[in-house]
Image (cartoon, rainbow, N blue to C red; front, side):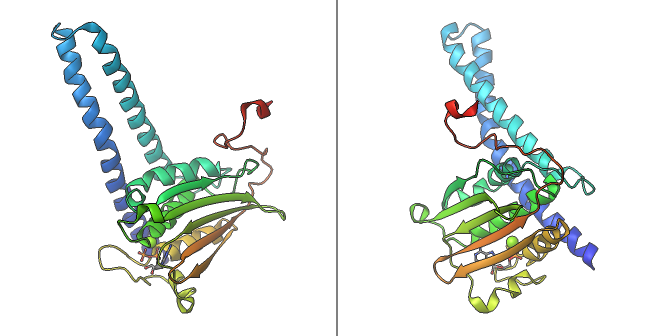
Length: 254
Ligand code: ADP
Ligand code: MG
């Protein structure tokens, strides 16, 4: 039963992933195709060579975008059940946010607030990615469409004073009534229409996080929003790294 649950959730997140990937690759691919036909005109001498530079620049950007997307898919599909880290948390969070982009983009502003001194964590990239993707898509689905400017999904990381790392995924969506705060973690509990929710996401999230030695809990106010708070273990005996993506002044680097 447990294995079946894992498989079924894996398939459902694979489905979400496939939809996101197709959507994400489509735009840069369409631009690339346009650039390609322009390049052919260029080669035939039908347009002046100096116009070629811009086309080349765009083609490079599109190719880079597609390369990044393929890199993200690798993060999510690597069969690394045995690999328990050390994992660069911010890298996995950024991949998950990119994968969830088309769920988020019409509903909320996305804000990341990453601490600079976050150590690498316990847990494989694939599993952490699966957890974050589910939490971010849940957050997006809790926000009604069409009020993008009033809503926010915020991802916050910090180092726990007592060791380990805290990740918070906060949304300003519909919230969860207090009476359901435990039930949402039960397998098959869902308030979503058929085809949207399986009710498996949070039960799997909790189990995976527990296996990594971490924990997950929810804080929520009806009509105000929800925060999922994760506690993750610092990877054992691994050098501390600061985030590559942390926004800090260049002069402070050395
Ligand atoms: P599913 O998303 O397939 O319904 P989950 O296990 O991921 O299954 O979530 C279970 C239920 O918990 C959801 O149906 C929803 O009612 C509630 N829920 C989860 N995340 C949020 C959130 N960020 N805001 C409001 N409700 C949420
Ligand atoms: Mg879900």
